[in-house]
Image (cartoon, rainbow, N blue to C red):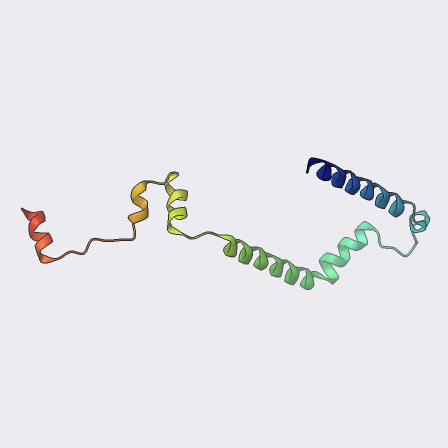
Length: 112
């Protein structure tokens, strides 16, 4: 089993090296930068002035997605919430949701 894992890891490593070699040797990397490509200042101007509304909407949507994802991942079981507060879980925590049923006879016994 270890030999299969080692051979697979070696194969993936060799594949990544070959892929990097092919990507880096492509002819598009030899082309010089064209004169009509935007500079950093022009790009910043386009993002913050011409596309400001779209950037704000995109940021709002992404933040809503992150808040929703964190809410969905949150574990709200009682035992985990109490563990977050106290730092430890006690044996009596399992019975925290159960209450004794009080009757007239049980109240009289407690008073005596």
